[in-house]
Amino acid sequence: MNIRNFSIIAHIDHGKSTLADRLLQETRAVDERKHKDQLLDSMDLERERGITIKAAAVTVPWEFGGEHYQLNFIDTPGHVDFTYEVSRALTACEGAVLVVDAAQGIQAQTVANAYLAVENDLELIPVINKIDLPAADPVRVAMEIEQVLGLPAEDCIQVSAKTGEGIRELLDAICEKLPDPPAPTTDKLRALIFDSHYDDYRGVVVSTRVFDGKLSVGQKILMMGTGRPWTVTDLGKNTPFPVQVKELGTNEAGWMVASIKTLGDVRVGDTITLQSDPAPEALPGYEEPKQMVFCDFYPATSAGGGKKGDFETLREAMERLHINDASFTYEVQHSEALGFGFRCGFLGLLHMDIVQERIEREGGVEIVQTAPTVSYMIDLKDGSSVEIQNPADLPDPNHIEGIREPIVKLEMICPEDNIGDLMKLCDARRGIFKSQQYLSETRQILDFELPLAEIIYDFYDKLKSITRGYGTMDYEIIGYRQDNLSKVSIMVNGQPVEALSLICHRSNAEHRSRAILAKLRKQIDRHQFEIALQAAIGGKIIARETVKALRKNVTAKCYGGDITRKRKLLEKQKAGKQRMKTIGSVNIPQEAFMAVLEQE
Image (tube, rainbow, N blue to C red; front, side, top):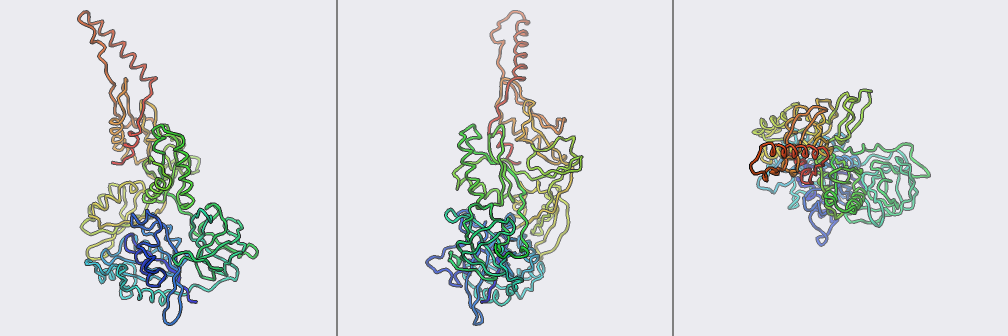
């Protein structure tokens, strides 16, 4: 049987999932009765937001030139935060269908995903989607594809995933243009794990692609990376509904169940082989996804001094979600103001947003979230380096040689009218201009290098507002770079509050500190004594605000008489206020932390 393994890749919202729906209908994999839009997006959150979060693998039949073909395809996410899902899917394929919107043209993630496919030596089929739209201009988009990606304009297949136009031609092109899977290099079993998820009844369900040999029910297998043996209890394919099979042959893709109880026992990118006759070497795997954005999650009620049970509920919700999404990390954290919670690491801001919403929905717990931060590399004077994700973990300044922050290569595609404003925005965020390239008569590609800390808060929103929604961006981490960075400590009544400390560039430190203290001053209630709010770098105070004391008129009862009586009372009150200030504690309300964490 002829087999074709391919992925559908595109920028977010260019119609990948709708195209996957049409492929399923055209190949008769789904009848009209069972069909629904976004069939492969299984999560409610994916349907509501109209985005793909988790890649989905499907096997469908097709007939071309009088021969039968088995098409194994993976519908991948389009957002930059889920690039690791795309890269995993591409490793299990020989080709890719690159979808471009006929109205919007090439966007930032289109270019990034196309380069990812080229790096994996995949055959690309360019597809221009949404040709039924009134604003569609497939000829211009085809020329953009040729200019930017070097794929001939005449090779572009024009389809409408909404109406079904051009879908048969696309399926024929997949059979004709995509290469046959490579011949086996060994007769021993080697299968690549490209995804996994947890099922409450069957344990871990592993998505796998067999490269050499065959995988059968009842075999005793070995995971070459972890060295753990298992027995295959169930095999199957998604067509798109699960169908059991007895074996998966060479170059076939499907799912496997082997009574694996925890997701930690399965490493994505690992190679499956036979325990009794193992393969000499494993297949090339993947790099582990690296968390780039960090923030703290606290249960909302315990943050206000609530029940201990809320923390346990949050812990259970975290564990349950981590079983299905191993790409985020978490560890227990304690804050004086917010109680017990978790320090979590994410692949990006959208990933953080998705995880928070899933925990609140699936775990039934309300979350208080701190401002996102990035990881820093601290070079110490003894020559060693440590990585920190929380400013509170910064070592003693006397031992620090330098602080390095993560730098990203940022690629923006924007209308040429907005180039000046975008350059100003990047310049204000410590960006370094790299290159500028014409995409078409009206659009250009801008390349910058920026610190990740400068783009994780509101950069995307500002980009969208400057370009009136037409600009797109894609970024990748290129390394760490040393700069004039400092830790700013916030002190309330002389006591440092670690939950509010931050690491920022020395040039921005004073401005950021003043903004934080101004917010704090409005949120902290007045006490019987004066409260000093200070921001300091090391031992140097760089900003100060004061919460005035509540005053009581102690001299109101003195009618007439000598002025010394009043002075004596005022001195007595002054001494009492001084004593109160030294032993009194300041209550910082929950709202004060939240107000400070909201960015300007």
